[in-house]
Length: 430
Image (cartoon, rainbow, N blue to C red; front, side, top):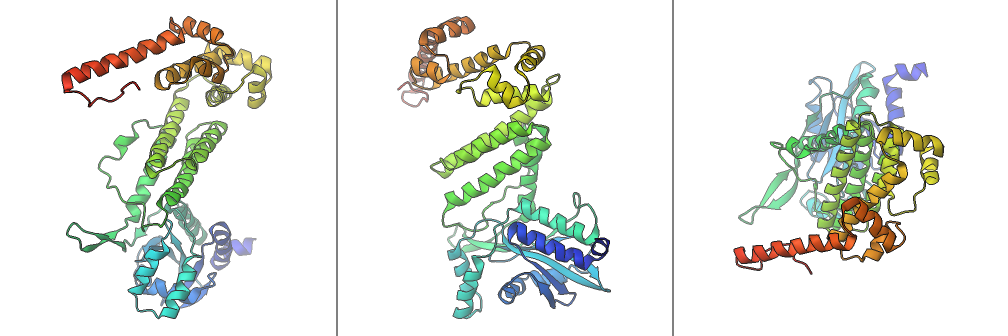
């Protein structure tokens, strides 16, 4: 083991196997003149050709005299590579990982780009098959692999390392005059945006929208995909998991995080449009941020009691008993009941009732569910008992509360119609 750690080349062989096992991505080792020594890629001839004709090799060769740090390269096909120089056996060697697609790639887009290159039909056909084997690796994950490469080479922590970026055109887009223009995919800006969002999750920063003022927004799609909704669904599932990890790093209980994560991942597949996915993504981000914020501001509340509250909020439509919750949290019923009342100032069963009553108010005012259905869904049993506890909490029955809110909406519509010329108000009662 000591011999392996003392040999940069042996460490690189180990690294090569690890990232290929994790993502299917390949590693390459070149001389300082660009001669290929070895690679884990089975299609080295074709992909090395793209590395060269895309301008990546020239860029990499120009980095030899630069300070020792990694650099990211891209080409017109949307292939992403990363490299860094290492001293092995008395010479500088270029170590490259890639290629990978940052987003799902449209084969039609790639084929159109290849037609503009000086390639034979046979070569294009062969390369199209190879492109289907290139892995899709989100930029955040790609950056993790780059940090691992830097550590493998230098044993230096990659947390604050410098990275150079080669921003090359990756697609054509129609300009206002109908002509095509080149659009630059800015790796650095995209990486910055993602990092900022995840930091907002870790910090529980509810004012996260202010963080992005002055930041240039960039397109996350490097290419037009053949199935945009499927592509965005895949990207969103990855982002949900990244937010979940950031929330745990921000101090939120892993149990709470796991419930939120699975809730949104399951919701992704049920969305019917890109707009629905966008709304769900915003909702997911805000819930993680607010939950972390609440966790940080819940002074005097222990972690098990926070988990208990979160469990109640996530399962309020299910039968909940002191026994079932204690089993989930890992405490005895007696200890949980005493600890909960001491820290929250209310009995656990009363807290469950309060959570359900708050959701009852939401359903009464925003849906046409019957009072019997709401009572049943919220585990109150009979309508009579539901009305009794609702009135004790809110000073009126559920029916009276609904009528008050709905009549208030009608009054707003009437005033709006009288003053605005009619017909342009929202929130009409159907």
